[in-house]
Amino acid sequence: MTIITDPLTLPCGQVIKNRICKAAMTERIASGDNFTNEKHIELYKMWGAGDIGILLTGNVQVHKENLEGPANVAIEEGTYKEQLPMLKKWAEAATSGGSKLWMQISHAGRQTPGEINMSPMSPSDIQLKIPGRKYGKPIPMTEEDIQDVIKRFVFTAKIARETGFDGIQLHSAHGYLLSQFLSPDINQRTDAWGGSIENRARMHLEIINKCREEVGHDFAISIKMNSADFQKGGFSSQESIQVAKLFSDSGIDNIEISGGTYEQPRLLGLDNVSINPERSENRKESTIAREAYFLSYAEEISKVVKIPLMVTGGFRTKAGIQAALDDGACEIVGIGRPLCANPYAVKELLAGKISELPKYEKTLSIGPWLLSPSSPFRIIQAINAFSAQAWFYQQIKKMGTGLMPDLDLKPWKAFREDTKEDQKATEKYKNFNLN
Ligand SMILES: Cc1cc2nc3c(=O)[nH]c(=O)nc-3n(C[C@H](O)[C@H](O)[C@H](O)COP(=O)(O)O)c2cc1C
Image 1 (tube, rainbow, N blue to C red):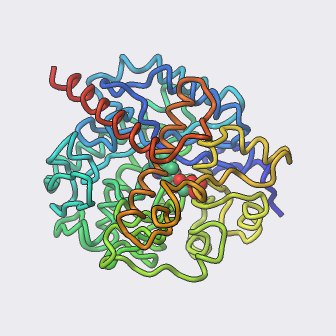
Image 2 (spheres, helix red, strand yellow):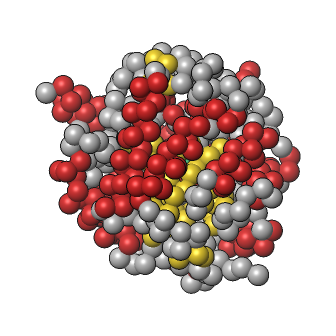
């Protein structure tokens, strides 16, 4: 029987000290230059002291014009040399307590905010439409664009290795570029990069093979993928099993299972919030009954893959984590939001000081019932979801200044602050890049 504190040896030989991973959470604390700075160091000093097996960074971008947010870290060939010392400090701070540090690498594709770029890249020109948010009509990528993006992923992986990170994770979940390629409703290409599942996964496999050549066999390569998009005509759970097998056979070390997109935010357990209801699929009852949302998918995937699986989304109790390990559905459990409320929550859980991780997402509300997440009005549900997300962003930013999270922060205030800060960050990004 595996217990939470048992170490795990990955196919690359890397030993993880326990079965918990801090899930990737975008930090959005870089400046207009999109470089790592002291705030990343402060933040990861905290998480690095939290007795967590693996720390995954928030999404680090490979292309400055296709960011997930204006204050993302981005690594590009033209400017990377200036970033090296801070990247090394980031790795030192995060790993000083024995955690492994993996850099999550991403390209936002059509989910690039319109304030940054109204002509983002995507496999096809299917535009993202979300009320209250602006996204441009994407430009379908040329063969040259695809080869360039593959090169950028590999380059960033190489820099991660050179600066002391222990691994990388390709972000192919939640509707970002790599997951856009997998989704048949978004990837409508008729060339070698679209159509069959092998074609839709071709870019991933090229990146994995080239990364392996570049980083060697003793460096962890992981991929985060959706169990499904939960959208009609989108990436289905049957396809995700096929793709997981392709990834497992390609010689990576780990697959992380998540699910959903901006239009269908199941990754956060938001089942009543469907930004695009007519495209939404119903949720399985068996999934609702369990603590973590993607476990039943992971069980299916675990039957066809040979590498350790990680499942992320909804784990809040030691018993729930242990049950997932016992069922054999996964070897590692990812924890996200609880670590924004208490960076040491995992340490306290493992030491028996607490029996449950913080669950602020269950209590955050902008007002009484009619204004709460259970409001019958879709718009109110959505504002609550954005406000709760802003609450977590604000706590990350707070920890970036070396302070503990502010648990009394009101979600509506968090939303207003975060929106203002995002606007300022966009200005800084534009000033830096236009000058
Ligand atoms: C503030 C915040 C930022 C996030 N940023 C990322 C990200 O950069 N990359 C990613 O793969 N997932 C991201 N996620 C999703 C988490 O990795 C995780 O899948 C999700 O929070 C569900 O896990 P939890 O229930 O333990 O929070 C983010 C989630 C939150 C709350």
